[in-house]
Length: 146
Image (cartoon, rainbow, N blue to C red; front, side, top):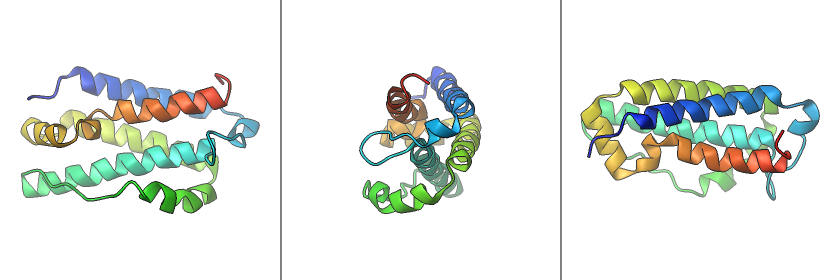
């Protein structure tokens, strides 16, 4: 099934939301907890990591001219947490915005037939706004709507 064009607009809106939240955070906001172990910096680093994972899938799929699923297990979040905590929060926010921007452009201009294959295998790899919104909702709730 072809990927609807509104997916790209939704992805772009989620990227704009990342940017808006990131630029509005104070240093004190960046020190606040988000959930049990995360900080705003971890949220941003996490979003950038998973968007980059989709970029890697797109690269491999484009090169092979067929769907290539890059195997990454969910435990990577737990494995990566200590590293993500070392990333300065403002750098993590910048990385999340930069990565989301690049991925949005890539998805919007990706070969439609290949994009359909990616979407059919894992819709959330194309509908990045879904993943972004989950974490941004949690981040905003932790910051009290900041």
